[in-house]
Length: 88
Image 1 (cartoon, rainbow, N blue to C red):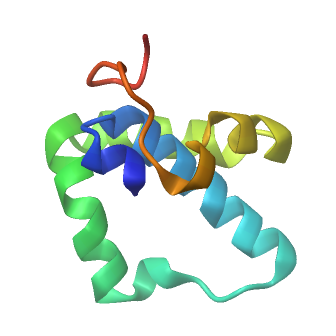
Image 2: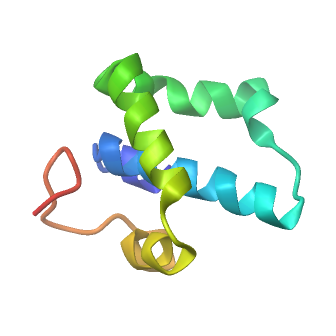
């Protein structure tokens, strides 16, 4: 949710959806049922609205791993100079 800290809410939802798909593909545990994870998504949901959040999340789930990795900020740092939606 580094992207959310940079107010890149659409990007945050998309990357979170991609992370969920990756966790499922490797059989890892699912944090979405964890209330702490849900609390972390709350500002993103509030900023985007439920429909836009769901659309971005679904788009992230469909991203190939290589595209999700390319979109993620290097080293977990938010990119500089990006707007609210994560686009230049």
